[in-house]
Length: 563
Image (cartoon, rainbow, N blue to C red):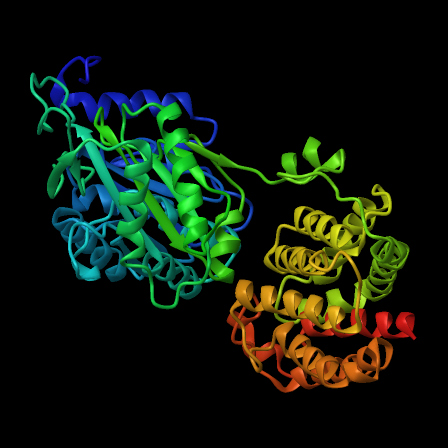
């Protein structure tokens, strides 16, 4: 029950006044809501909104890397068109405004009216609806928005903060919505300020399946489940409606609705996690907590957003708002204690066979060669990446390789598989961008494959390790030949290695390196269809892909080493 209030009719205004005074260092109150203080460079304004009672949505998500403003209506009530217009006009920085909110009739009408008024004043106003609730309708266009508001808002805010124009910010927001699914349950109803009874009641020892966030009951009642059973219900509900083009990496949110304790949500996540793994899904920086609430409702929901390169970059991006903060830098240099002691997540470093032990120094030397060739090429890789990207490919690859060398130098002779496993983890941890995580995960996959023949090592083990590496890259990036990515060089390398392995690893590797170099050069004529270069695709024509180029440099350097 909501117990702290003066006049229940003034609850939304009173709480907002306190909120604005508390966070006056980063935002300003305007008629109808709040807007963030501006940075040095103008950006597309992302304005979120809806009724009160959902904190930290909506006002709590205003700040750098997130929303530029929030429209605040009454409890569970759409803000008026005048309120939306007021906040959007104050948030506009001359690059256009995107209005984003859950798919509810009042919001659709009032935000739409405000958008038309803004356009009449020559302010480019776009609308991105959130339609993530799979329980509310089989048709995506008719679904309401619940906790998936968060993933869509986060994606829009990150895209705007990155400096993209309004077309690209809108595209990323729509992609986020299309990739997001949510499903939840209620254990108890919520009570409006001043009311003596909740908006609905859940029968004793029952739970409402398929809740809404405006006090709507579930679509059906079922007996209260154990955490394990509830996890299965939520995961199955989302997987039944997974996007047809979804990959295997997902942003995951276990969201509390208001009175479900964090400890309960932690326990539930621990049951959800293995179910996602069984379904072939890898959670990326999952969030567990209260992100989109419903006053004092008891309940929870699971949200999954299937990630592509752009959405994953947005999900990782820093944000600083009153109700949510994400910063990568404080964690970037930390190494888990189990890793520093040589322990894996669930096992210690193995005692290698004599054959594997003899290869350990060669593995360490190979990693140093990779580091050295990337250091030498850093400036050139940065230059070609800057044509249509942000110019950090060279620096990123160097950081990953340096971390991999440092990690393996701490290990005693424990076999090439274990060394590659640790090198991959270190590489991914040092470079949080997609290419760094992809290379790291691919090295881990190669390391796991190399550990499966502990008794003796054969020439075709090199092919199997390369297969694991390239397959991991394909799974993570979902790119194909011609997309102008690292895959354009990796696949020709693998095919040449396979075809020539009968002549020995050295000769086959050299043949593969020649194929990779030729393929990398050929990417200059391609138009990128994946990754960060895609928005400026035409600018990259005539320049080789930096990922394919760095791959070719690495395998060519290793070819000289093997011979």
